Image 1: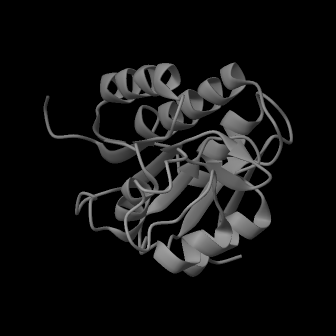
Image 2: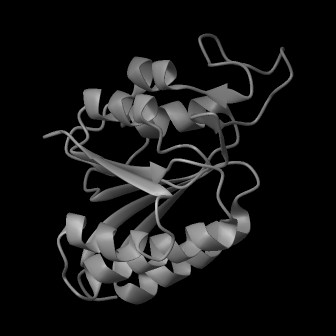
Image 3: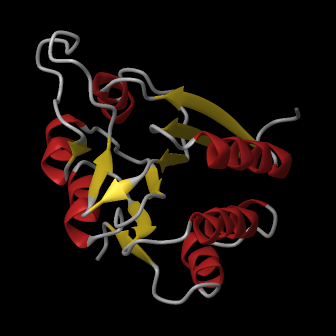
Length: 184
């Protein structure tokens, strides 16, 4: 691979393998360098969000998870398996993001259902990310794959600015995605 045109950290939640394989292959084909983080336990997610287990150079943090009511769906472990201080339960909320994330300068794209709600987006912006994109409703997985593919195609291949790429990609399925920025 020649010098990558973009650096993407692809964080993969439970039961999101097939879409993640497609996204990784597509992004690499477009010329992005993709680093993959598999989330097998809640602390894996915390480590990526906090920067403990994340590359120094990241343009986009692509959070490929299932979502429910504005929360990330995480693996549930047996009580005796959790590490001290590890988030417990099947969901990771906006409050959990505020407690653990350090995403200064990293743009975030969350793909799961309802992960584009305002409360979750604001938690990421509060933790330093300049922009946050996600679906605001329960969406079809195919629509999500197409949105991310088109959005990244416009950014990487056509050199569009983020707002313009977002507008083009979001036009495929009106009103499913929201973009939030630190500027408001």
